[in-house]
Length: 554
Image 1 (cartoon, rainbow, N blue to C red):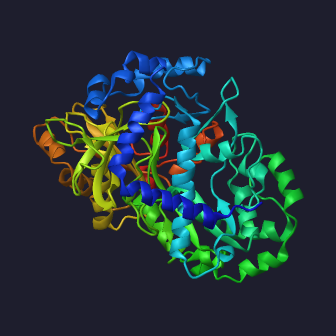
Image 2 (cartoon, rainbow, N blue to C red):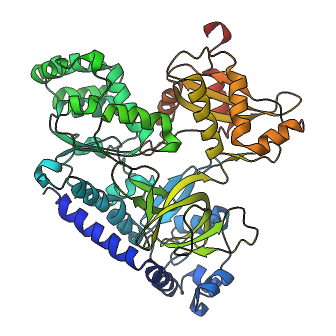
Image 3 (cartoon, helix red, strand yellow):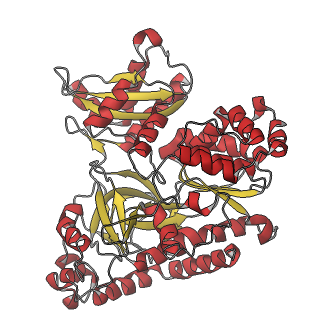
């Protein structure tokens, strides 16, 4: 039976507002409930959960932690040991590559999945319903084009694993009961048996569906990439639709499946061909799917190029910027439709603490103590066994929603390059590229950076993929000046001859897309594929070195 999205969304929003009204009380009650519930787990016994009577006790008895503090515990949990970090056993293991490139497994219990379902699944539909108050729910909630897929993968003992964004769908379908009738692709495509590139197949089903009302994805680079794929393969896709053929380089199994499921559809092909291709770029989503109501994807400053492209493709369609989350937890939900980089931290997510940035006292503050305009490192205790965990996320408080803070994600502290102690973080790198793009009018599709120690003095090597011709006079010098302005410590180190001026190489068109395809072919889960910024392995460095445009090609 079709989900009543309006009712689900209303209930979720009511719960969010209620808990945010008493955020401080909810935080305190939840912490002590969590400690009481897990006092007899091995971790709880070790740190004396039963003796903790106040928040200050909690902060004194339990040290700040990172993944290394849990790796042995998690290994034992994976091997079947119970009652280790929590009394409630995990039902899912989030796979994260973290910032080291090494795969990590993070346990996730049913309590965590349920909260994720409410706050980053349910609230979406409530926010959409409030945005469209004047139309019927039947008109608003129709077919969904889900960009990602949720391949069912398992640990050796049969417990599910995968990416954080897919856990709700996998959990809902744990017994095969998820109703996929609201999606434009069949269930076997939404939940494939194997990890493979299904882009062409999903796009064929989406184009065949006239009555799509929503596009759902995770990060905007993936969603914009699908729109770009449609744009660049327009004639091929319409020819295949008209004749029922398959021209893409996909597996024989997919070709056979499509031949059975998608018969020739000359009427729909003719309808789409009536759209002027020269003007398809702007507003293409509404032109292809006239009943489209909204797009779900995470965009904003960290994805500036793709966010701008998405706004062009959407041309006025509202975008719901989804959630602020990581493998370790789901922390916030988008404050409103059509506003990026603003997330309400929901009080039931877990217990929040915050270390002020550039504050030598390093006294953690609580959820209701942090101030608008200030930046903090977030420390998080989740429901699945991470206690006072340092993700390294730096957030800025940009507003309030009742008693809960509204935050912007800035950067992750350990995603930092520091050749000479200057600590260039992702926020500074983004500011550098943005300014470079403004000065040069370069259409920057993607960028990444690594340390280069091949010369006498170390330097940064920056790779740029541009949508327009990269023959920019003095490009390296301009980028260098932008970097100096973004990070004064970098400039100081350069003046002290500790760092050489950076090197800039331009990439061939489609380099980042090729890298994604390479990951997909190697079996990586692509549902929440993020943009790559820091090249932290030799494999990544070599790949992008091979994609550079040579001097005679500029």
